Image 1: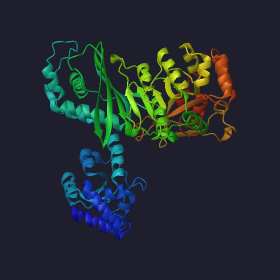
Image 2: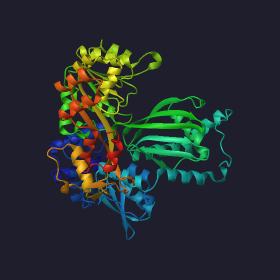
Image 3: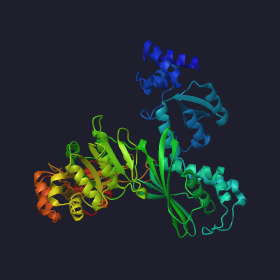
Image 4: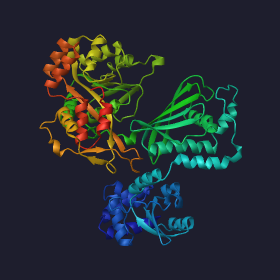
Length: 583
């Protein structure tokens, strides 16, 4: 190991990538932290992984492969995923690229590792032509390549069926049989086949950027569905015979009672995937056919709390930050469940947090744990409600308070009292539009004059899927559609209708045939100006009047935000129309 480090050090010195002093420091760090020298150099900021790989490439005469030069792209149709197993590829940081004349080209993070090269020759039966690439790029391409080369669950199911053969029971499982042998259930749930199947479901869900996993039993079949970018897609399900064992396995992971099948249960567990800790929130509900499991995938590594990535228009971002930097007042974000409200509020807190601000949150549940923010989980069964926690917060010297949701009059009144006594309070409401929050709060018993004086900003949010840039299809909108888009987008100056280019979703391997690769938020943001404050005070029972004043102040609604995303080529007309149908 030491010889290898010195050899790489000589290469980096010769190529001028690092100085002698930097090499000494990196070598010491590598030895102390038990990492490779190249990783230590990159970690200390002396050189990028790409610069190190290029230097090694030039001095060893090994070709450099990257996503940018298009070489780090496995050839399709050569069954490369069968020639090199995914686990072996991940463990050894390598990726098969193409096969030509009985020579297999392989991208490697360590192209001079003789042991790995020998193992590859024995495994594949081919001569190996090594290429050098970076660890990060290899892992990313492994995700894309093996994730699209076939369903992980399909492979596990094929193996399982082959192993079970005639041993599988031909009769249906009676899910209502209370006499089921619990010891047998536990044994099956811990069996290698069931463990592999559950792991495969979780692994595929994470690789496809799934937000929720649904496993449910019906009379004739089991259904497995993944919610990807807000839409449910069917995937290869477990067999009926394996269904109970899969449910029991999930209960064991979540520390739930496997004998209880009559009542709903909630639990959670964590797993580590590619050095990322992913939390799974589990909900089990009894149905007439058996228990239904829904697992929420909470991947903190996939959530970017950068305010510039949220989808705000420049003026909306400016208004939100202006309200968030107020010393006191109320900020409300509205929208249906699953519309990304919590992520937006986390982003705002992450943007304004600093050592001189005391930030506290009360949530149900706490989605992600954030550094520098005091987060509290609601526990209604012991009396820790939103209102009770808020009362406690006021004795904790807070500057900014986040209340997960205002559900009742007591919580609304406590939020208002906190805002009026010098605290900034952020919260959410379930209303269809931003200004409907005013009506809802007045209906909850908040006096209009008190609401008008404390409200700083009210906003609404929806999520639209972003079209895949690899396979999207461009087209010119007809005159009627272009005119409606320009009018409702409220852009100033209005765009030239003859210059508009829209896109349709099509579907390719990169987007798993969905036509979309992610989601972005649409916002309507109303910063409370003097005119809006007067309208809330005098006309809080007339929503149309308040909305008219907001429009006169230059604010725009969700549909306008959606049209702007269509004009930018970020989303599609169908997607925007579907999520702003109430406009």
